[in-house]
Structures are given as structure tokens and as C-alpha cells.
Image (cartoon, rainbow, N blue to C red):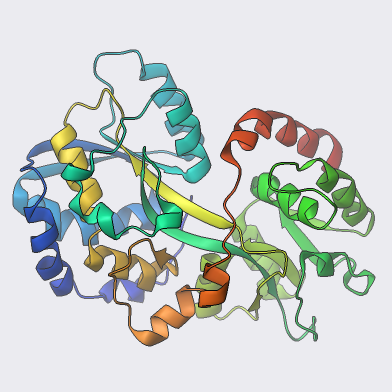
Length: 347
């Protein structure tokens, strides 16, 4: 999950993290020593260092080492090491789909809540038995109001002939793009098949396919693309950076994206691993990630400033109806969905 940030946002103070962290960490089992955290790199790793490691874990004597790679590499490593008595990671950062896949393959411990006191503040819709949710956001529609003069209200608006050639999709988001198409074509979160024919219609209309989120940002900035499906947090970041976009909520419902942290069964230092999860759920780091990345806190006691809360959190009525992906369906169908995307849609 590559993250690009405005560096000035790193100036968020650490004092609150230090104070708020003391109470939460005090209830967890004493931890020290080396802990290896498998994570995405760049600014995401940098924020963990500044707001989780330095103020909350280093003072305890926990030595955090980051194992930096993308989600696919991390899952491959976890699977290859799962039968070893000791693995190379103590904490694994994965998408919600990735953590579900690893849990289904017996890779992770069930979370010991007594060792993660802050887990009691996690929002119910984000809870699982095998992970602690770090950040979350919802899938929305981004559009350029100078080109798309009527705000979209549905994923179906991407198929409006008036916008042919101005709609973009992202290659690495094949899964969620097919899912969004299915939601307006008679499918569901447990049946993406109707989305395939719907996307072929969009292909005939001249849809633009961009390789990465960063490429999409450049296209939105230049006006080459005027509308796309994207995560709200990414839209927040791009708006802050001056891109000419607004955020629209699709009437089909907002599907969640969640980034998780889990503890492998063969972790070498489980005390430190659980201390890391507990620190990650501390209000201070949760506020810092919301400020810097535009993702919403996963806890109910983050106490965001009103303006920041308004920016990163969707309205209460939307939150009440958040949609959660069918992870079992994705586990069984991801390979064929990606194959169809590469062989048929992109051909």
C-alpha cells in the first residue's frame, strides 16, 4: 500500500500520544526485546516509527525492526514459514482480505484481548478474532466538478455516455472495480459475475486504465480523467494536495477498506507483538494517522478535532450501513477474477 503524504503533516505533536499511551500500555503484559513488523514501506512505515514506536514502545525497551514489502510478498512469506517453529515476523500488516486469507490458512493466533487492552475500543463492525484493525475508509466516487457538473450519486453514473473517455479505473484495484460494477448489474458482494459484462460496456465506451493510484492522481490533476472509484482517504489526501476533485457517496452503499495487524502463531516475541498492537490502537497514533493519511480511526475514543472528524469520517447514517466484503467469496474467486481482468478486460 504505497502512501504519499504532504511532509508538513508530520508535525502533528507526539505529546498527546505519550500521555494517552501510558494508561493503555500499562494494562498490557510487560514487553521488551526485538519485534519484527512486516509492513508497507514509505510514509506508512514512517508514521508508525514516529507515532507508535518512538513515543510508546522504545521507552519500554522494545526494539522495533521493520520488514518492508508489499502485501503479496508478505503473504507469500507467511505461508512459506507457517510450519516452522519460529517465523521471521512478529506482527504482519495486511489488507482485510489478506489477513482473512492468512487466518483461513491457520497462520495467525486468535487475538488475546487481555494482552491488547485497547481492543475494547475497536468499532464492532471492524472486529475479527484474528486481527486488530489499524485504519479504515470507505469506497466512494471521485469526480472533477468542473467537468462532471452534476454530482454523481451511483456507480452507474460512470456509465453515462456523456462522460465517455473521461472515466478511469485502476489496474491494481481490479477486485473492487469488478465488485462495484456487480453492485449495479444484479450482482452482490457474494457474486461479482454480473460485473464482468458491465465492465465490458465501460471498455467499449473508452474507459482509461491506469496502473496505480499515483497514475490516477496525475490523470485527475491534468483533467485527462474526470471520474473514478476510489477510497475516501485517498480522495482526502488528493484534495489536500490541490487536485480538482470532490467526493460523492454511491447510493449502492459504502464498502469498507480495512488495514489489519495480526500476530503469526510462530512469532518469536509475542509479548512485544501484542504490545505493538495495543500501541497501534492508542488514541494518539490513531489521531496522527487520521491527520496525515485521511483514514478514519478504528477506535471509539480517538476524539478527533471536529473538522478532522468531518473530513475523514462519513456521515453517521452512512456508517450505520457500511458494507463489508465477503472474504470467503474473495478467497475462492480472486484468482479467476484477476485472470478475467488481465485476459479479457485489459486485452
